[in-house]
Image (cartoon, rainbow, N blue to C red; front, top):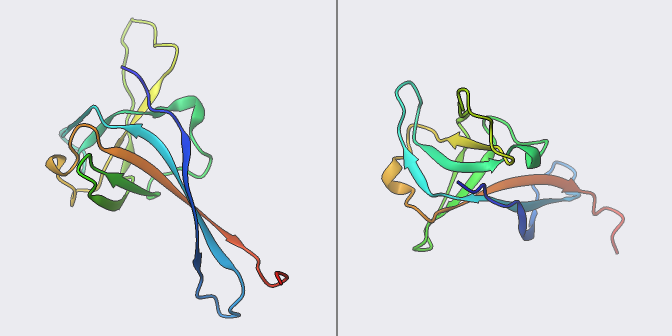
Length: 134
């Protein structure tokens, strides 16, 4: 199974409602992987998506509760959160050269909403000071 690439796919700026009226919120979406399967596991809140993202390429700000966007092959877009990170046990077999980390979704997302081919994007946000911009 091949892990998904991490690719910067979208850069956009949105106005920010800050008390001082200064600054903008800069959002980037990073393609984590393309879903090859979605299934449910006992004890997990929602579906688990595989293959997951490369362990070695995990963005520092990615955590449980981080915002993600799912884009289905039909073009539907759904924003949700990461509910958990899954670990794959390889038993006595050596792990592959590139270890992937599957993610689980919240219980309000059904596995039928995440068909094979759905792209999973990690949404990062940072504040940009525009007070000194002309």
